[in-house]
Image 1 (tube, helix red, strand yellow):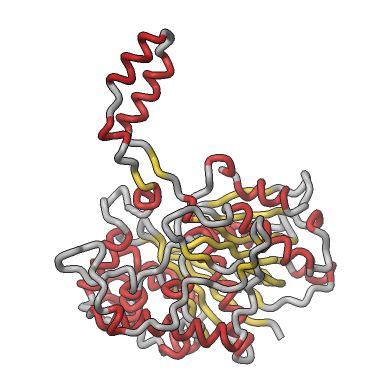
Image 2 (cartoon, rainbow, N blue to C red):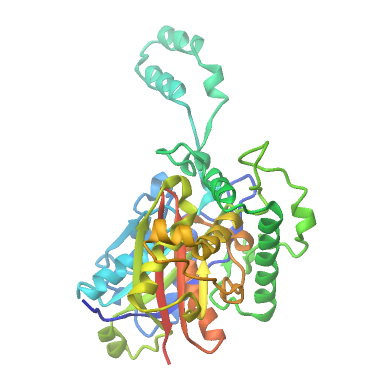
Length: 429
């Protein structure tokens, strides 16, 4: 059944700040609040006029578990505006948008703030189970002698071997592989060379630098820390990146035979992104000027060991429903979790065997024109704050379409656990 489109009225994101082996200057809620306040200040409605706030977050801190509600209150939305949090790993921000779409289309909401955030530099160090059990036993020791006996049993090995939370979070518990190892699987499956991946990564940096210099990253609002320091730009972009330099880096996930390195992978990053979504009724009520409309969305599942192909499985049904080819899409945003992952998606669409066996098509879908893909760079240059990336690519897709005079675009993302998400967006006149 055809449904009314949902309008993207406006959007904003923070600069994406690269994690540098220590907690960054902003907690996740700080990132979301600063970007959200700047966005809401330029709207013709008040924050209290929102029907709900939905925020995707893959790694909320223990004191901000329902970070969507925390942020809504801090932004001045008032006690009556519900705020809630969604989690779908790398697509948490896109899930927030899709959850808003569902509520808007069924009439439950008319005006929603939806987006995503993560401050991955704040990911915790965790004690191993042996250390947790020791702390539990210590809490039951009531006398000085009993406590002294417990300290004599202190498991020093466990004490000095904390579990890195982000490593645990980026490891699939079903297949036992880190996300980078699933990218190695795709590099092997489609015979992708190290040089191909490194050259793709260089292109990401070069395109992002060009976008920064030309002012095309219009969605960014600056951050200001407690000391008054201003963070105006994504800070993980490297102007000196080249394939020869990247070729000197050692493989990270498969030390002996691997091709995935830190240089051809997305960066661990802190950042937030928001979109204001509205129904046709809200557009008329507030005299809003929508930038674009979301006309379709799709989720898909696949083998977790090849999770990077999720964009292929999610975007293809959208193309089929609307009778579109790859070439009919003016701009593509495919989140760059790994260079191998994006290149594998392109190879899968060009493969007769893959399209027949995995997508049920009569043959290859075709070739995606590189000049339409991630035209202003992607997560390899910008970073991948997991909860925010799905919202960022939808938001930037709108700006990329506007910059080329309008048109139709698809934003798609791979998801740890073996899923994919995609959205079809069309600009408004």
